[in-house]
Image: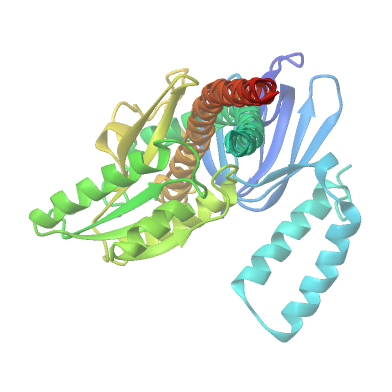
Length: 139
Length: 297
């Protein structure tokens, strides 16, 4: 980070609307097969496919916007990060109690039968829990 | 006898007035929904623009050459038509426009020896093609005035499945494009394989002109991206169709309301004349009766 005051335009776009748009200083997300990546202003052009994950956007005013992103893509340029996802949820839109209940139910279900669908749903649930600060220790 | 006619007319006027109230209400509802539907069309633009750009950049980077959804087939034996119609009628020529356009294409294909599969979206399309004995792959109904992305996803998954299994060799999308509140047009757009126009024009570089880094490989990204792209196209078409449906319904209901007003005017005129006639006849009868009495004296 050459210039600590540098910011970039961060957008989270779903097919139905622009979910989030603002100035940020850092974005952390997780790519398919790749693991977590962080983008700072001035990052090289980057195109990646995302897995179910807890994405963090560090805003210019010092706050952190948490969201659960369930698959999608990230396009990065020197001055912008764009996350395209057909299923992304902002932290404030997630119902914590319902998600925790879902986690217990899904884990129970997985103990008796293995289905790819249930596993994917469980991964989404974990992303949601992480986004709402549940199991994540990073903040 | 004249009084009877008057009563019948009064009844008819009352029923036309009731109909007019309904059509007026439907007109106002449609008008308010156009605005909302239009906003949804606009809100979906950023996503579809960006996904198009990413597809372009990826195929420019050489990822797309052998992706099945991109490569066309040399011989087209079966064509799949995804027809976006409404669930309900009372919207003027909206349904018949798309239905007739599709039927014309299917007949043309039949002359060339090609088969067809219809994917009917909306009850009207389902009823129309089922009644006429066309081959319906699957129908999706019950949401056309307010489509969601998950439905676009279902339709997208179904048609890409049809294409990948080799059951059909081309998928066409027939819908009514919403140009403005005053103008909509029936259009037919190729959906799968993707138009070469879509993939051309990318340079594999970001806006700043630097080469992209890819993670994972461009091929893997494209593989997961193309189905999303098809879904986004279907979703945009669904939103356009919904906005057009409301616009058509508003116009149809406006002219129905105008007609009802005209009818009420004509009927009241006839009724008033009948009333006057009956009064005149009554007076004539009284006068005639009185004269007969005095003549008898």
